[in-house]
Image (tube, rainbow, N blue to C red; front, top):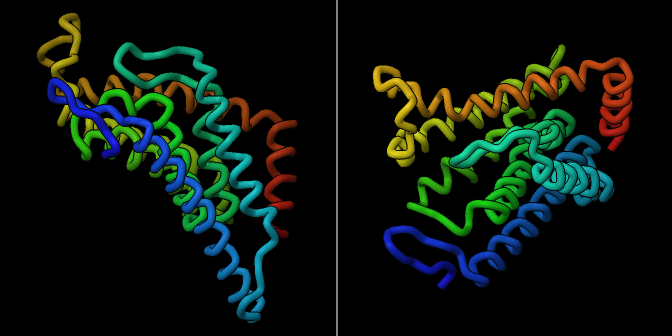
Length: 230
């Protein structure tokens, strides 16, 4: 058994956390295989392996995103926070390597986020998917903007929006009872939207300001050039 049940909610035990770590490792291996296959097709040399630098870069980006997720500028009372560029480094992987690697890396990040804060209180499998696995994996949608004009900026903003959509769905289905008394009852229908984007939008604004700074913009362009050679 991977979880314990009590009073209508679930909590992961040690076996559950261990299983998630194994899944994360398997997904990273899948990223390596996926990129290796694409490289082989491009070179028309079946069996050619992609340099390990791609997986290393993706892993380093996800690790950095995970560390930054602990640096919270502001934390909401019932989950969610404005972190220091955490979402950007997840979306950045997709932008550099495309949707296949982007979604895979984002899924690994979703597992890490679930381990960080979600494993101690779960209402249902679908609630976990909305709040963690689907929401954070959605950041990989940035991969569809690889090579597009202003693709990094647009891809990041679309990724943030998509993450918010899944959080909002979970809010409507599971968290409406947590709406504060001070929130206007006439606006109850938009409460999950207002709650979730209240922390997603500020982080997105901060991130956009940072990545548009000339030195940062130049550095990101240099990283992109390196990634194109991988």
